Length: 351
Length: 250
Image 1 (cartoon, each protein chain N blue to C red):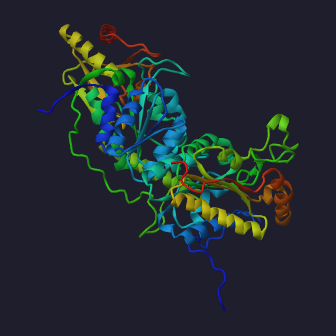
Image 2 (cartoon, rainbow over the protein chains, first blue to last red; image 1 turned 90 degrees about the vertical axis):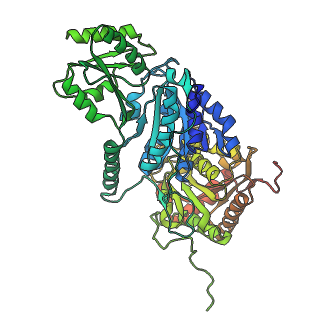
Image 3 (cartoon, rainbow over the protein chains, first blue to last red; image 1 turned 135 degrees about the vertical axis):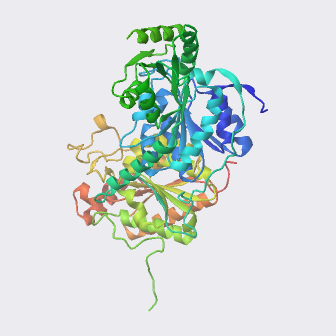
């Protein structure tokens, strides 16, 4: 049996990055993710890696662009305000199709906000942020083990699709400790990157760029990107479906609220209320088919988030047209107790 | 007959998109010749900024990464750290480096990133149509300083070569010009030296090049050369502001 070690979420993530073969970290301090750069500042040099305390998040993401364009696995991490600053870089990385990984250990906003756990950056990560028609891969860990595993997965997907992977975690997942297996489930394979900029020795000039001014060029480039995103939607959806076979109510939650929901589901089932959980692990690509299938069958869909209703939009878009959808959210750093969720389950039942 | 001049193998035969009279094409040629003479074409990667230099890859047949506006020194940092054996250079204009990208250039220089930066100072935003830049001269009329740049409201032209020379991480900082053949020859030497600094792992090197923008200055190409001589150089003096001769920083 693989040994498990009591580990903090942020540390599991940082160790996952090293094990994934990431050797370049660039970042600027911000709470509640400082364990990540501190761990990597200490441990990257031990494996021949590079750590740069960058002058800003804007510089960090562009260093990721430079190292990623060189064909190396590179990352940065931050939280709300820092992630906002990086959005320009997100867009350029998407446009020039360079792989990279960004971690957002969310803090609440808007503005300087606060440092308590939240999920207020869902919309920014999944639906936007930077300019242009682009997408990021968005992975939502709900445990310390997933902080480790999904970081490795994030690098794999980033390389496979030449995209940015975003690890979107709330501060609870970043800060709590759980037993964690700190070895990869599968061997790490870093693919060849013939597109990387390494100098033109033995080949023709290569470019990584996003400016296309010729007639129709930018549209063609955009359609290529969309085809890639379609492949992602077809092949890479990950979600947890728990106790849904007989469920009358389906809770949809990611990250920490999914953990709270599981406790509420146990409490409800003790009362004879059949509740199940759909937990998207990939927020993009969103589990569209699962959402449609279950929402057609259950009596009620209850979305629980630590925000004012952001994933709710995707649930509504992807649910069956007759689905009854209710929402319970705690924005601005509020964390729901299981009995609050149980209360919402009971209310949904009465609808 | 002896051939005394030929197009560098590091320069394509594509007609440039630069306005007639602009000295930007000369700057491209000098960079191409320097790369050829140093024999580094196959391991050089260029990172232009956003502006008239953004199409650099059309003229220099080397690997090129397009950087967001002002961020080329950060991209170059990531790339050089990932590939220390490659020659990485930025090619930035004055809006790109001296306005939106001041943070990135200063910190890349201060870290002593072993990269080379070619900096085109033509005192305006060229590509967007001649708006006021941080390098615009006092009294100079642009589309966004129609009454002339006034130090009381727009401050003073920023002197990047002198500014960067104050930083410990900088190995070489110089300002050259392209307005006379003699100056073009000096500019070429400076560009070669800047690349040599990188090859010899001396640290950050920067060549500021005074270049014309006759279109946006609303003067003829010949008059533009006089503008450099009579108006730019008095404020932006030519010269070497820092030059490391040994690895004295170690």
